[in-house]
Length: 183
Ligand SMILES: [Cu+2]
Picture 1 (cartoon, helix red, strand yellow):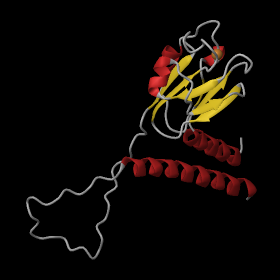
Picture 2 (cartoon, helix red, strand yellow; picture 1 turned 90 degrees about the vertical axis):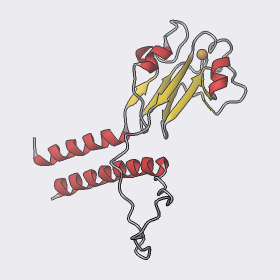
Picture 3 (cartoon, protein in one colour; picture 1 turned 180 degrees about the horizontal axis):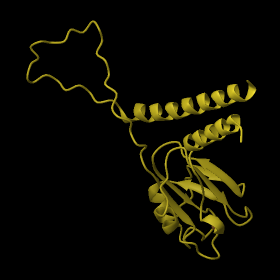
């Protein structure tokens, strides 16, 4: 195996990490009702993260995928969907942490258990990067003891930082591999 191949494999591995895992809902059973798969047990056995992909595989003549709110999930109400998928092979990329509630919109299917609650953990935050104070702001030598606390950075900026770091390492990895191969 040449060094170029090794580098390509390395780049592929790096990209695999930043692209996230792919989870087929229900594993080999897919998104069905006949065998009554336990979708809550299936979801509980996984650790979903931002960047992962959910695949719903089913016969679109008999099923679909409807994203609903938490309360609609519990009552199996599909009258106010957040999103509807109906290709029979839907892939949904998880963009942010939180809960995603999916049910089948066909009559009676959600009530029979064709529903899944995907809980996505918050990304692991990198070590807090200290924000440098503006140069023109003098460092108060006699700070008042009741001075205001510095505001903490918002979590959303941390998440996008993680995302862009991943994207950046991906691109750099690919470029390095390409340069190596074509030299
Ligand atoms: Cu169904």
